[in-house]
Length: 323
Image 1: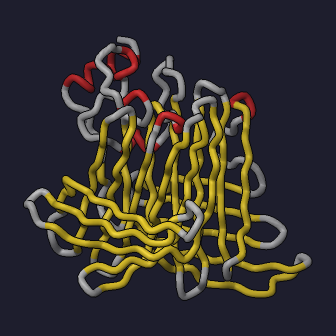
Image 2: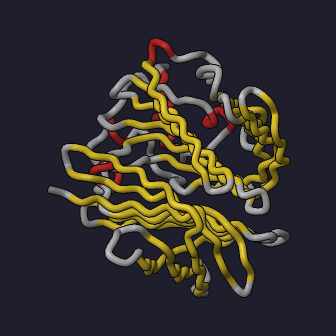
Image 3: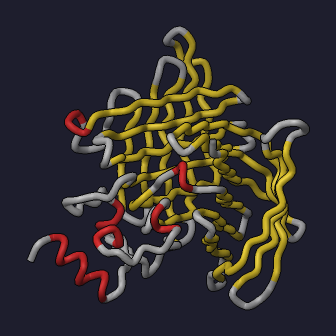
């Protein structure tokens, strides 16, 4: 049986995430804009350290992209590199600067970043279980003709997981260690594969709000006249609750398109409504021009409030302006 037929049989029985899905998928053929990516963040507010990285394989373009932002005391250290597939390493140790390790599938990852100014070594440990936001979706939909409209522009498979990040950040100056900070903070990671046509997405809000006893994670996207939304509320000692509807109100910086705060009204599977508010404390602008127009992403570190509690996390905002 070919790999393609084996996957089809598995899908017909219902597609569940397993440990092997932590790694790169190879179906033998890929649709245009196929993209498989791994994303990690952590926020350590007491240390004034924020971290975001994304590793992406763009099958159609035969390349990988590594994107990393390390924010220390408000100052950004960035790293961006494209690597042709024929030069890809076997173990994700891309060069002397960036290395990714899957230590225990579904439970533990490790990321290292090193340059002349910093040496970061962070361990990501499972805080809550995997949330499969594309559960039951056929990741081989491109082999058939029954696409939904939204499946034409963004990933068919996508799972996320709240984590706890611990590690060390060594600061250097002229080759000498000047400070070591012990990293500890809440974190989020995700893994997606399938079509990701950024220029085809009209708008997007992705949020992970981390509190001492809860993680609230959701997204809402609009593309080709359709809305897709989903989310989950994790609480210690209680069953997780699915989010079914999301209302978003965003305040922009005066005379600019930069988001500064948002209010999210969430309706869960039991019909209960909750309100979460965010206030941006750091924003990274990521423009993605294409033949369809300009897609603008704001990756925002935010302080969240919910039921009188304060937490932190990421509020990601995307919009596309077409010519």
